[in-house]
Image 1 (cartoon, rainbow, N blue to C red):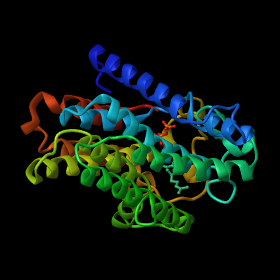
Image 2: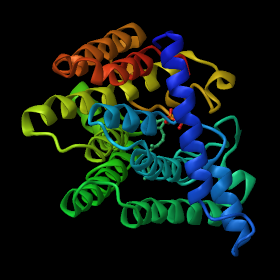
Image 3: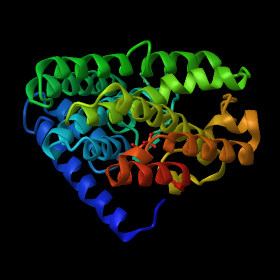
Image 4: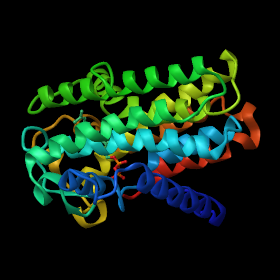
Length: 299
Ligand code: GRG
């Protein structure tokens, strides 16, 4: 992580903004059905690094976007992410009891509630993009809906999860691993960057290409580092059960390349991500710092 105090305070300010946006867009716990709304708030609020919204903010700054718009777009992505974590923890998927340092949603509530929490969070995400004016023109705003839908669906995150479930107990080649992770983790991270950009001034193809490259490389790097942390960090540090990949015999970058090989692949991806950002000068400062954070993080 870039240790600059300036970056740290940028991150904290945006994490607080996302937290309050999420607080406001989630139905209050007192509104019926209370238990579902309580569980939704339990799953989303007060935890997580908020990496996806931070990337949206970084990309939004590059495109000189209104931060209020980016907060909504970032919250939409975070709600999809939170839904995926709730469903991923269910016994029919990754079967875990701990998430963000507390009991997983289906442990704290029950499985049926956790299923509905995921469904409802996904709906709110799309409702946000429909309800708020986020882009300068309606064609761009419609494009944002399509972008998020594609990233979350069977040709994005949900498809990646299907591949992940099928791959358990098998060994995958590095290109097969890459295909799985580009979908499971990379698609939503890429969407976060591209949605942040679309909240701002319209960029031409020559400007968009390096940003898309950044988004794709950093999305994959995030997962490579996640594999290393699963193998090397503790449950207490991660706030989720460590060592699960090996325990469940899942193919990962660590099983394919070894921990050191996976770390150097993540570094290679970071450098590839940064290629092409130079032309943006200081406007890309936060994206560069976030790339460092994603690759060097310890949690
Ligand atoms: C259930 C449709 C469906 C998809 C699930 C995201 C996902 C797909 C599963 C989560 C399991 C997992 C370990 C994914 C790989 C990396 C990842 C997304 C880790 C969690 O994201 P962080 O580190 O979590 O951003 P926080 O808690 O900080 O938000």
